[in-house]
Image (cartoon, rainbow, N blue to C red; front, side, top):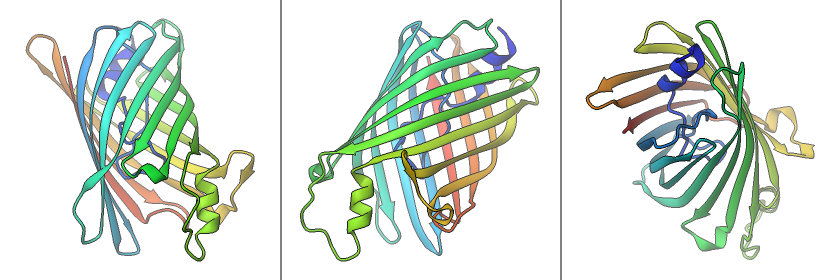
Length: 256
């Protein structure tokens, strides 16, 4: 097993709450392992000027072939003073372009579809290019994502909501990055970040863009019968006025 594969095991590589800027969102890695099955739990909590929002996601994924991994999940969200409620359902796929562990870079395509619980919110699809490379004990992920919305109910827009609703019917451009250092076989640490630039062909003003970055810890615990429990704990600081002040997210993944 090369350095890239060893480091990747520590990262929780599927992101069930993929909708851009969701509290439980995390960086997606392009690794695919045929026959692997995994159950995942992700949770995130954001604070923006004292107003809290949270996200929770459960998912099940499997490596179908050497070049295709798929996942289905259910997502929950909540606001300050409110309990969690079902937000939507997601089907995510990763399609391997470069999957040879001996290659210096791994590449995969991301194709994901999400259906909100509220039918008048329509559908969304996320497409992306996922990359991963390693240098010694260091591993770097860099992803470019676009999310397209369609099928929303255009009626009953409140005052001042027109621009927001128009944006939701467009195609948003986003990114993710992650740097990890292998401290030991069980503990990894590093930095990660993500953001959204606005419409892919008409970026928002800098103060209206969403950017966040911060530290993260990753690890794994080996279990009997070649099973594993992976974990991730990350903290993100908002870097612009349009971004939440901070976001704490956690993830557990059980592989068998």
